Image 1 (spheres, rainbow, N blue to C red):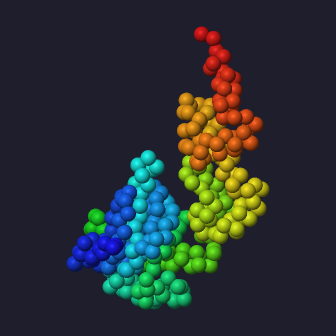
Image 2: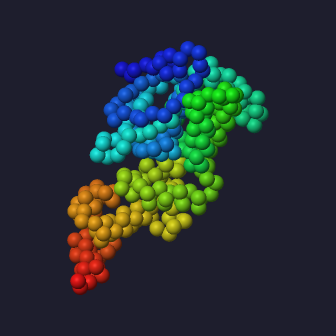
Length: 301
């Protein structure tokens, strides 16, 4: 049975919202709450799990919108798999959401936005979105700072920033619904994706996960990547991992099995097969070759 968080547990009696930074648990802490929650992952990767058993990978740049009611939790990976997921959370009472959404309704350009209708109707929602430009995080940091260090006009600044935050979420939500990538071009999307692969090659990079990361279908992403780069996405991932492995084989004493795991291969057999296909030799043969050819080894004292 999910734990129910009451308003007074986190927000208090005299306020309509709270904001702060959290480190998510490594265990299942399924819960629901009486308030709205915006939860932004600013560091780490983990799993988001819903009360109906759906699990989704969540990583830096993803943020969640949760209305009162739906059960959910974010689970950090085991210590050997990664660090705790760190989030910035803003919690808002239904009364404050009603106040803000009424103000948003006065902006005529937003009246047809589906997300605004969700806020106005206080509908149930548990949605994960991606902040590719970083604007959501900037708003949340500003709001959290004003909340933690109140001074002259802090309440006015917080309300204005909350409205700007919700406007930005409206746009991202609408883009996702219509299949529009926020970066604005296929080239930007592929550049973002290749950078993500280059910096996360040691993690599981399934087509399903990457498609969700850029808000495209698996089929569309596969076609677009091949069109823009000239190679299959799976080939790019494998080649990236092989290049990282070659570096470790040349410049470290790390055992070959550990090299395989650190570069994202599920096992040594898969690694050796991919490595030989790419280089024409086994990992052990490659290591002996580059060590033998090393100018440092050939230097005479």
